[in-house]
Structure formats: C-alpha cells, structure tokens
Image 1 (cartoon, rainbow, N blue to C red):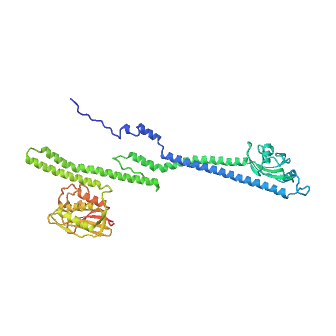
Image 2: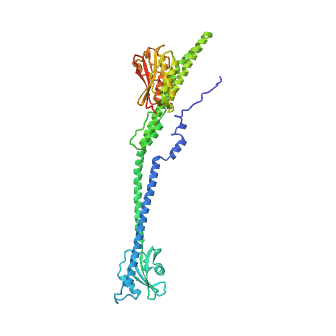
Length: 503
C-alpha cells in the first residue's frame, strides 16, 4: 500500500517554544539588553542634576574667588594710598619737619600701621642706582610658610619691577603686591614701600566651600535617586499596565482594561489605550458576527443544493427542475453574501460620503425608482425643500429597501407613501404603507440581523432578514437612526431620522 500524502505537522505559534519570548534565545537576549524607561528617566535626571549641582558649586567658588580678588585689590590700593599721602604730607615727629631720610620715613609709617591677617607691610631701602634692597623694615611676622621679608628673590623682583602692583607666583604660594617708590632728593629711587598680601588662606577657604557644596550635592543626588526611583515607578505604572495588558490580549479575550487615575498625560495614554481596545473589541465582534451570520444563513441553501444534487436522477424534467432550484438557492446565497459584506463595511469610517444634496430632488428620485417595485398606489407625500449634507446613494439604497419591504407586506392596489420633512436641524425621510402593520413583540427586534419576526404582518418574509439591518446601518452612518412608528389607519411607517444634516 502506497501512501500518497502525509499530513504536515503544524505548530501553534502560541505554544511553539521557538516563538515564545520567554524561551526564544534572541528575544531573551534583547530583553536583557533593553534598558527600562524607569532606568533611563532616572539616569537622565541624575545627569542633569549632577551637571546643575556641579555648575552651582563651580559658580559659587568662582564668585568667592572674585570677591576675594576684589577685596585684596581694594586693600592694596588703600594701603598704598595711605603711604603716598603720608609721604607727601607727613612730618618727622623728632624734627617737626618733612622727612629727608627714606628709611626714617618708612620706619615711622610702619610703626603707626597694623597689618591685617595675611597682609605684610614691608619697607625696602636700597643704594643709589642699585637694583636690590639692602635694608628691610618689616612690621611683624605673619603665619605663612615663607613671608616676603624672608624671600630675597621675591624682594629683589618686586623692588626692581617698574610696575606699581602685580602678582608674584612662588612655589611657596602666590603674593599680590602694591609698591610706592620713595625717591631721593635727586630723583633716583632710594626706597620703596611694599604692601603684600598672601591669598592662600582665602583661596583655600573658597576651595573648602567648593568641596562642601560638592559633598552636599552628592548627598542630594543620593536622596534624589531614591525619590526619583519611587516617583518614576508610580508615574510609569500605567505604562507597565499597558504593556502587561497588551501582552495578555488575545483574539478570544479583549475585555481587559487599564484603570485610569488622575488627569495627566499618563492617564490620557491609558484612556487612549482603553479606547483602542474598545475599537478592537468591536472590530473583532463584527468579524465574529459576520462569520457566524454567514455560516448560519449559508448553511441552509448549501444543504438544499447538496440534497437536490445528490437526489437528481436522469429524467430531463427532473434535472431541469433541480437546476432551477439550485440556481435560485445560489442567487439567494449571493444576495446574503452581498448584504453581509455591506453590513461589515458599515463599520468603516468611509461607509458614507456626505455631499450637498437637495432633499426635494432626492425624495422625488426615490419615489420614481420605488414605483417600479410593484403594483401599488404610490403617493409622493410631503417634500422638504432644503439643501442637506448626506450620501445620496446610501440614502437612496435605504429608502428603496424600505419601499421593497412595504411591497412585500402589502397587496396590489394598497397605498404606499414616500416623503420627507424638516424640523429645525432634523430631517426625516419616510416610507409608510397601509398593510397589516407590525406586531408589538416584533417592533423591538425587526432592525436586528436575521430577525424577521414570525408574527410580522401575519406572514413570514422570504428574505434573510438583513434589509432593515442595512437601513439602520445607513442611518447610523449618517449619525442618525432608523425608527418604526405607528401609522394612522393601520400599516407601518419606517423613518430615517438624520440629526443636524444641514450644511
């Protein structure tokens, strides 16, 4: 025995380990490499805060150093100005006359001064025409590693400098200085008054403030890390819920929704996701309903066709009758499929295409087309004269369907009225017949699919029960509704009510 074919094993993607994200090595590797939004937010926040705090600390240090520099410059200028005034206006206390000896001038002035901390007042006396001082007059010792009066090279450079102020860089520390030259009576420099300031301690104090600010910033970053981690987790909780919900959604279960809390952007995201799930659920429900309806309504004609074909004999008359019955059933199947496709399309946003339409002209066109449906007393009732926004083809389709429905449930010669009316922003198009009417128990269900109503008009229709469903879909596509109203004198009136249809 030879096997002509073998069943190819199929694998369900939902249960296939190769496609399961939890077992797929590639997917698992991507999951491990992925950095969560919570971590990214935290890292960016820490980076921004670190830069901001470092900038604040550096700016504070710069301001402190600038203030120190300005204070030192003011102090040097003040001391130099005081000596210049004393040289010009002072008198020797021993003689009562102006000073003639530079050394005496410097010694008397320095005896009357008291230097601030880190400030050094020095008098330098040199030989005529010399470039280095030979005598040092110093007021008092200052607590620095190497003061100016102990640094011969620094004294020489300051004494020989043609500038009146400057900065001297030494391995032992920087010196800011100002100098006032004392000339002999012949004009040549004989001595110099030097005020020197050692800014090392002031600069160290600014550096200490900088280090303290950095330490405080580090503590603030640690605290911010913990707080930001908790806050980011609370803010992103709805996002995680969105991800979890999306992962758990299946075609069979679209009922899960995300709880919405607050009124921020994350809450808006949850609302938008829930609205998307609503649309998906409606779409899947429409798809399932279409499949169920198609299966339900097509099963009967298919059974009839199969039964007649199986029982068909060789008699030509029997074969002709079978072909006629099969053709009739196939035509009915074709109509059912077209109606189901139309109802499925009604869920799309482009189901109707509104355009400016003259309501009176549309009503007259519907009346002319309906007159060909059957031998009835057709009456063009009241007509509204107004321009409205609607889809003329869809409205014509719905009105012709209502007229066909009226023909099916009336007899020859009975009256069928077609008309339109307007009441403020609302317009109505209607078809009214004089048949036996609709039973109360059927009035609630006749617009549903495949619900014809067994007691409707006393007979059961021959259609699939989709006509009034199509009418309702067209009305709702225009933002309106389809209604059944009582008819004076008997019969039924079907109305298309379109709200705010004026352009």
